Amino acid sequence: MASLPKDLSDALDGALGGFSPADMTRSVQNLIQQYREGFDPSDTVLGSDVDVAAYAGYRMPATFAAVFTALRHIANLAPGFAPRTQVDVGGGTGTAIWAATEIWPSLTNLTVLEQAPKAIALGKQLARRAESDAVRNALWEQAVVRTAVTKPPADLVTMSYVLNELSPAAQESVVRSLAAEAAMVVLIEPGTPAGYARIVAARDVLIDQGLSVVAPCPHDRACPIPRGRDWCHFSVRLNRSALHRQIKVGTLSFEDEKFSYVAASPRPWSQAANRVLRHPLKRKGLVSMRLCTGENGLADEIVSKRQGDTYREARDISWGDEWPPPGSDADGPGE
Image (tube, rainbow, N blue to C red; front, side, top):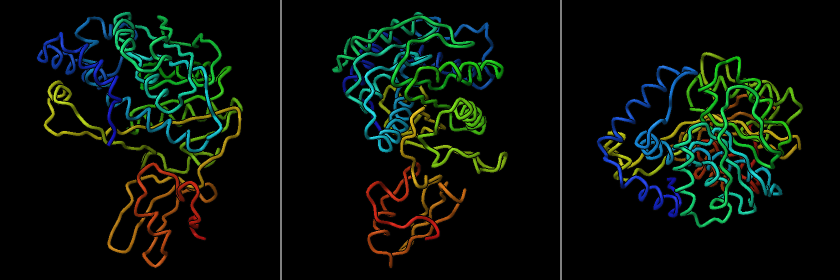
């Protein structure tokens, strides 16, 4: 179960305390409608203080959980990657820099590029409460992401939930510009068929530029998932605060954030041997996993209790994990 770090949770609670929950709930419903209907370049998004507060309360917990999970996958595969600089493009209120510094304390210089001045203002307000010096001292710049992005070189470049706001014609040029002078590029989109399609297209662009996929894919070949019949995405469960439940008009104490992502680098880091593509089916004495493999495309792996340590490892595996887990002696599919 994912949760916001305490300093961010406290900062967010403090920032939202000055707004009416009813007003934020209305703003959230308007925001959800905009996402469902699609964005027009002339749309004014996050144009008021209450809209930004509602957006932060509604999306920061889920975005943090998705970004943190994706970055954790990358860190597991690239233990020698210790970025010092990060640029977060279309960063909203700064969620990705909070997530990245949780994964890589080596980060010292952070830049957030964001279009909405009020989102920048709230992001700065939240950052002042951070325990991380890097987050507190982050540079915030107003920038419109519509074509190629002008950004400084960086060890880590992140962009989450932004491609869906761009026209299809702009997406390729934006992705190409993100990869320029970056040691690691990470793109995250909603875990829907449309979000996956944008990620696959971005993956193709990154590979065309000579980058290697780090995660989630265990290879640089074409995605083996049949288009129109399935899609690659992952899920992370996160806690909901009382205010989070209220502004989302939700009753459960948790929610599942589904996301698709790709990470690529000009340096060929390790890749997972296989990636678990769905919740493993765990029955008495058996674990069944759907895998994307490094050699054979899609495969189904069944691990039985007779396999001892391998079975115990399989019982602990989760959707999105590597299989076998790092440091394991377990055999891969078909071996």
